[in-house]
Image (cartoon, rainbow, N blue to C red; front, side, top):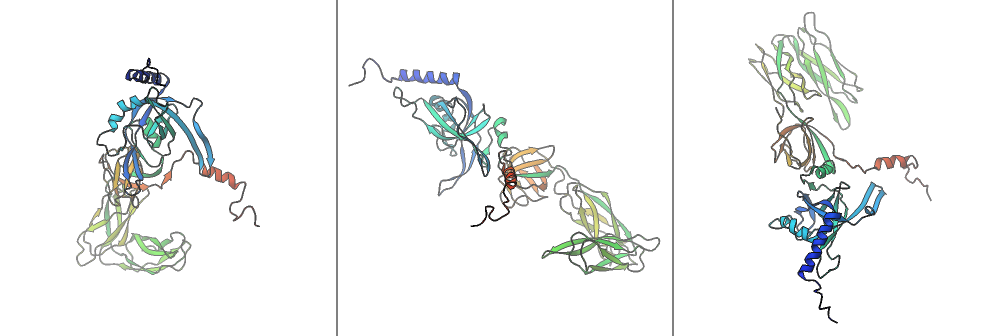
Length: 459
């Protein structure tokens, strides 16, 4: 039997009326959510697997929440990896609204989005009532089923989004700040400003010309002490420090450096090595009683911003003598604590000029931008900025490749051109507010002794 001829059964006007009524209902009973399309940054050519994604657009659209009794899904599950949230959300959006106000912006020559005519699985929905990000897992486009011969809505079945180092930069702070501390994070403490250290040399005679390490000893657990017999009356006592090294798990003395070569010695003083837990080390020395050499360095400016020992250049006439060699020591505050004497030299007629190499960065400048790529000048490592604190000079980054950043190298922002030097590099860490593994393990250890190979016995 044919359809009733007195009803149109799906004319354009009837379909338009239904669509308008649905749109109005969504505006009245719905909630405004943020639709965030997924863009493909990098895709494997063989398996067609998406290896990198980004979410940097946002579109507001009204949606009706089908979950009137709360989130669906399995809820909160306690697993061996901690608390796992399995909340699900079902949203209904207008097909017309999506096609008119979102699809045109996704269409065109944008190769990062392959399908723009409808919502796609993998896109994100920000649900403001719960302040949560949900991932679209399935798009139902045939429900209700062809009323008056047409489809009017999309039903989005969503699951709570699990972050996996995707780039999220929607320009909405409420969304972006949720992932600043998620994933693998490396913390870099940068040097905001630095200054070049300066020093002067003090000349003298009757100083220790060279220290001979006759036996480097063994078994040291800490740095031993070096004592040198005092100089005669009117002279200056010499002082030195030991530098240790470890070879094949055996710690011994590598060298002995002078902090003060002394003056006024007429005969070589006796050098005594004590402490440090080791044995067997011994050293002797020679002295210079005729020509002038550098007996000590005086720091006039300890500088700032140093991470590694800078090169010390000593220039001055020594005639037929020998140029001195100094080694700078960097303290805990990134300043030059002292210049030790490796070779005091000989033949100086006047005080030489001491030049200490500047720190890696005299003055850092600029402001790193969220999600921009930074590049290490020495290591070539690239990473993406997660957060930047201008006051504390702490930079958090993710996507670290290569071998990681080196202390002392320059970090340059590819978009901001911000430039600072690295002071310290923090360890990788995962900030997971649901990760309760340690708590679970501690509680379990109080019940079962897991140090046994089989806590339940043998059979």
